[in-house]
Length: 332
Image 1 (cartoon, one colour):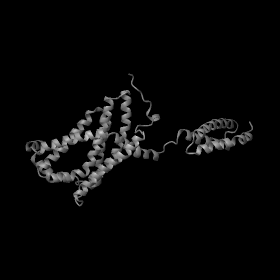
Image 2 (image 1 turned 60 degrees about the vertical axis):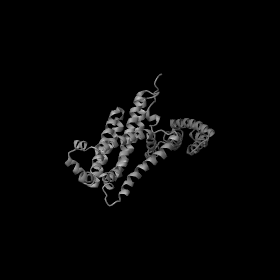
Image 3 (image 1 turned 135 degrees about the vertical axis):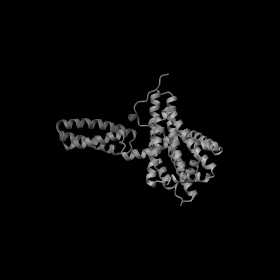
């Protein structure tokens, strides 16, 4: 084979392939041309490598073919692009899909907590059954308020974060059991309502709300999101639809585990609020409560805006098909 003659004849087609591979967009005719040129160039490269594998022309042609392959298949997503996609599409879409389950869970949780609080506040015998009068007095006078400042703020924040993040992860991962999430919701609602009832009964309602709302709003929001995600996974197991049960559960779990990752970050911010804002008596009460309210509103706007946009664009929070595996449909 005359290598020089091959180069002289084929160089224009190689240059054309390189030009097309560098373009961001191609019309139909250009795409067809690029495919044909790619096939020809691959044959040429094979011929060149058979006689001169280390030739500079072989290296250049290999580079052009590699660029063309990327143009065919798409640029591999880098780490930064993956992180950006997580925050701009996957996480808000996962949160947005939970909105109705979240509304139901929130109503049940707050309703049960309110019933417990009213029951405890209105019956001294119930209060004494829950805790001795001395313990009630200690809670009202010192323990409830001092809890938020008895340790250094950074130590307290780390402890709160790890505890709440662990609870959130458990509720998402073990949500398939159903009862685990429901039991956790009832226990937490009972504890919240009982504490509120004792403080209200002793005339410290203002203290309760001022110290619970700044961090309680974002913290409870995060825990309820975790509960909604866990119950959504459970429901995909109960009602898998047209897919095999394992396929439906796997798809839902892959999407909603993103929520668990997002909650770890949100709970870190909530822990900072609990450590630095809740016990800060130099801040006006309205400002402290406002911090928690703005936190919750911000998450709602984030999920509602970006999540709705991603849903309308047909995006999915699931892994891409090549990573997730095949979807299996149940037989009728």
